[in-house]
Amino acid sequence: MDLRERFATNLRRLRNDKGWSQDDLALKAKISRSYLSQLEKGVYYVSIKVIGRLAEKLDVEPEEFLKRPTKRIRTKSG
Image (cartoon, rainbow, N blue to C red; front, side, top):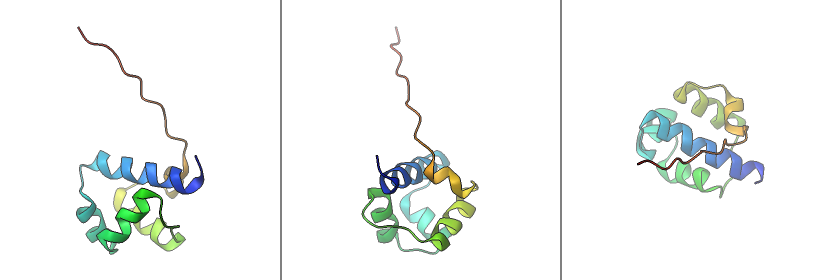
């Protein structure tokens, strides 16, 4: 997984953890929903300025976007 993919995965996870739609986060961070969508797909590189705004709105440190995603353990119920 390259850095752009890692950023995209973490951005999507952090947004979903807040229960926000792409429209919600885009509005709060003052970027277009289309641009946010492309960032979450790993299509575009992101600027430091936008990373700062996204981190502020998601209430995380900027380095959260580059952390290795943790593997989720699935358990069988029943």
